[in-house]
Length: 218
Image 1 (cartoon, rainbow, N blue to C red):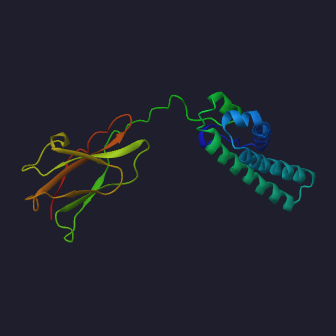
Image 2: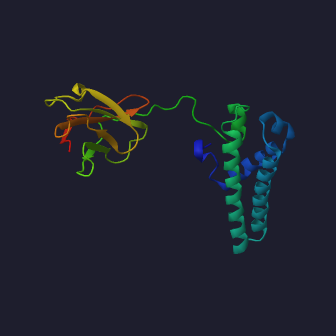
Image 3: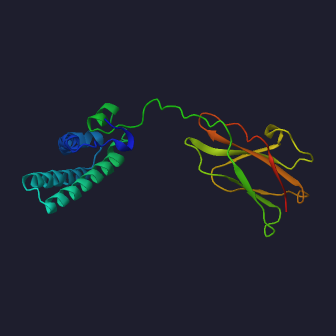
């Protein structure tokens, strides 16, 4: 059975079978009490499911184009109702066990998530300076963050002489959105600004970009 956002069956007959389970469970007042479900929401959801089953039966007995459109529209409404109820009342419901969610076809995340590989190399980047913003340097990472990346680390500084490695740069920071902005300290305007970037995930960090870049602070 699919999991996550794709937990609803793709095959219509499988969806019908799941709907039958939902109709029974959501109409059960003892389950409503045990799981903290709101009775009116259960009634509304079951009504949407029943409307789809009715429209489907009508189409099967009289397979006209209007009846097909009515069935498809009711199906979309039923699926939307199931997704809404699952998101709000099942998926993160502390009163329900994983087995009870599974009975309704709603599976949560894997208990042991698959580790996300850490990117090997740091991001490409660019810098931006402007005469209209004296003393300011903006750093941008290029492209989209790889899957699993939660932040971009930056090593930076205004050393008196070039450094060979990013680890030799004196300062560290991180950012999640472009741009990262540096404001020059007293006496730093006209000097070289050096930096290097790396990706950060929950599993670790990539290598720093091979060479720190430089720009003269305006």
